[in-house]
Length: 356
Image (cartoon, rainbow, N blue to C red; front, top):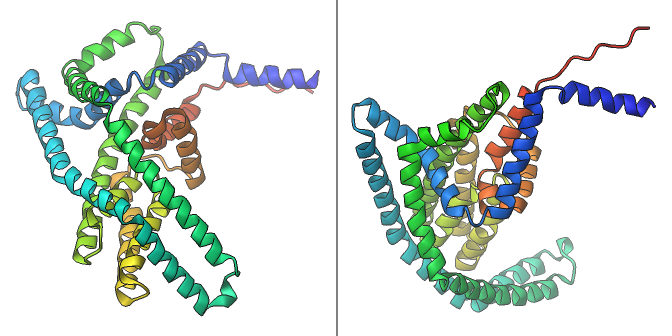
């Protein structure tokens, strides 16, 4: 009986408000739509993400008395032009380096294995006798994996129709979100209850967090990627563009991305330079880049973000990544922040303590 009273009190405390019940139903409905239709809606969601990035520029031009249609056209043309220029300038170089790396992968792994074996031979007290055998098996597995990855890339590229549809629909969706965003939002709001203080509060928080996060994350990817590429290029590291792209994209997954991308950076440097001063310089430079990103760039770009514990961030990356793949990983932090905002704004009915 006591258990029933506890559950009843908990429900009365947190779900006695009609807005709270509606918010739960609404969030579950949105979650189900994204889970089952996320792939189909990917072009629209991508256009929406870019709209969060660019709507501030459009609003600024409109404030300067530029007609909204003209402002939207100028901003989208400039954005797409820069995007195409970056893809045309970077993609061929990255693809060429990826192809060269895959072709050289067997000799690359042989050289890496020799270096590891040499190191373990010098310091046998720190390594078990099975290290060499384990590394040889690992090398064979990675070689096979490399071939599978390249084959998978070609398979995906063969789906030209799907890529073309995506490329066409994203700019169209972006245009209408920038042009008619307010009207779309008003039409959607007309379907909601009149009394929606909680929903409005959560919606404003979500919009602010996602807009700030998209802008900040894209700037972080660009800065970290360019600085990494220039550093690798100056140090004459092989596959500099490919490694720079990987380091830039690694910031999408906080903490985990930096750890994972360290493996190819160290492996390429070790195979190229061996156990030398040049290899040490590369490692130090890479550590400095990661340190400046985590301790200087991220606080500057995300100073308005709600503070989240690293465990909460990693958990959000795992959960939302499992649900929505890349986009779940990309938006893990604002979604986690949104969950925290919902919990903070949730109406709580004070329950009187029983007398006596």
